[in-house]
Image 1 (cartoon, rainbow, N blue to C red):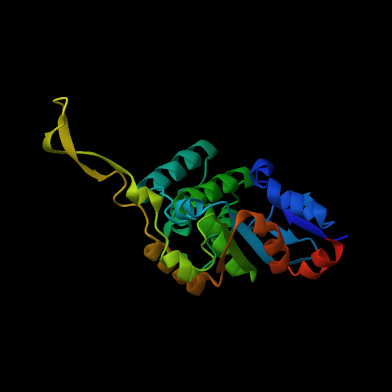
Image 2: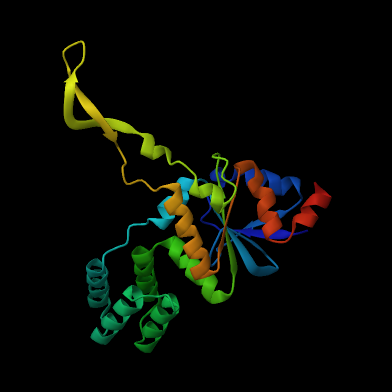
Length: 252
């Protein structure tokens, strides 16, 4: 029996369609923590699939609000003072977390600094958590895949008929069409109440063109690949990407 691993951070209630499909194909699903992504083959971790339940989730991952450097530094000092961590370690950990990590493995750097100063594992984990707060879970997953030689697929489920990055560039974000009353009064309604000019509620919401460019940039920078499908197609697509589609076809 083929077994795939589902990351424990996945909420089963949000992935019922995939679970039902795997079961219908005779695929065993084991929940365990993955270094990145949501699904991997138990016997071959060279490819991992990270799923997004909507285009808006993808936007949220890309536009994650970074914890400011000054707050990172303050948090490191609070932890270090509480745990009696050497001052030299504070500076090195700060740079390991906040410096550009394009050509390095920041998580490894943090660990090496902590080993150098004899920092307890519990404290090292707190420093690693600050790296996530600085860069976000999505970025960490991309870097882990890149540095571990894992082929990472980001599979974006959607009901918007987006099947490729080219389609995504033409996608119309519905948030841009939400209008509210602005401050400029343009007259009165029949009942005498003032009438205000309508303005966009979310004028800076991501556009499809911007999002498509961001995906292409990440594909080039991290070696990942963005794919799109309808929710009911996700289970089959995951098996295909993990190389077990032939097995699924024989047992369905």
